[in-house]
Image (cartoon, rainbow, N blue to C red; front, side, top):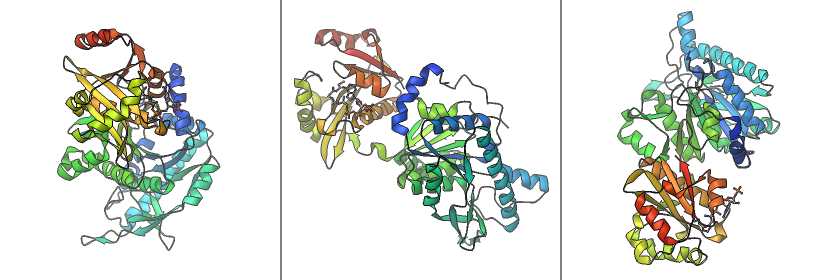
Length: 439
Ligand SMILES: CC(C)(COP(=O)(O)OP(=O)(O)OC[C@H]1O[C@@H](n2cnc3c(N)ncnc32)[C@H](O)[C@@H]1OP(=O)(O)O)[C@@H](O)C(=O)NCCC(=O)NCCS
């Protein structure tokens, strides 16, 4: 058991005064389905009670929650206490009859602990038999016996529960065509459930502080980068998180936009990951940003034409085609059917490498209010962070409230700008507001 259930210095705890910040997310998340996957060790951790309170908060904000749990730790403990050796603890290797028997016992126990905890928080829940499984069979000559793979998920059953405000609890035991139990890996199960329910997120709660790559926790990584890493340097990711990394990729490939890995032992970790812009775990993202790409030389004219109207209305600073071309490496564009419909630039100050500026943000009016502007800025912030920026600034004359209300930027003074940039600011005579955000 961990003793890290108290707030630690590394935890950004949300204060009651941040309620306004949280409420901003509510319309975005309302009625979305979040699959929360709990490792068996997290159910056994002393922070588990706090996690259930957090889940109650999510429910009260209109987020639909499905719980999937693992049993690895409990299965190993049962094996030790009863002196019965197990063939595999995690539902990935072969499951012999003795292991299956212990897995069923461990699973009943874990489901029951969750049921008790949800009841203490006045939440309705139901343990289900919604997962149909088939034996994994013989792989590379090894008969996996009672290890199963997910065949079908009774989505109608799960959705009926969710729509009646009942939290479905899914254990890592599936049922074969003959109704007999098969052991299923819970990371895989979470990915399959998310796909079947078109969930918007999976949140894996595990006893790790996120996705570690070569010893450092990576706060955000694209699915493509993670896939490449697993292929070329699998050892860069510790074995304990490799299964989650693989299943995160699978989930994103099959339509779940985001997968989070959060330390389930940290007080307020779940809530902070969802409701604070920095997060405390790791985010693996996919399709969200697939239409955004770095601009190429051949985009210069399109960027110039795209932003011309905004320049006329003094929303953006005038830039010649030559100026855009010279700085084309700083631009990102959003493409729909090979047409550029939005752009943003990201500039690093040579004399202050931890500071980056987001600018030239423009979305064609026809595409307004579809979340594209927000995505462009979020993406630019993410790229800036990957390159070592800690603070992002934006200068805006007419859309400053977009940055503050939709993107959590705060107004600051021009003194934050490095000397050379401040000089340009003064010379422009535009007097834009200076907005800032920590990443
Ligand atoms: C500002 C701009 C980029 C927003 O793009 P968008 O794709 O429409 O924005 P999104 O769809 O991501 O975000 C929409 C949210 O922002 C709000 N919003 C959009 N424009 C806003 C503005 N000018 N001021 C305040 N809020 C604004 C919307 O009301 C909406 O809020 P909601 O999510 O609570 O409903 C776009 O209006 C634009 O290109 N404007 C002209 C150029 C400009 O001013 N650029 C900024 C230069 S720094």
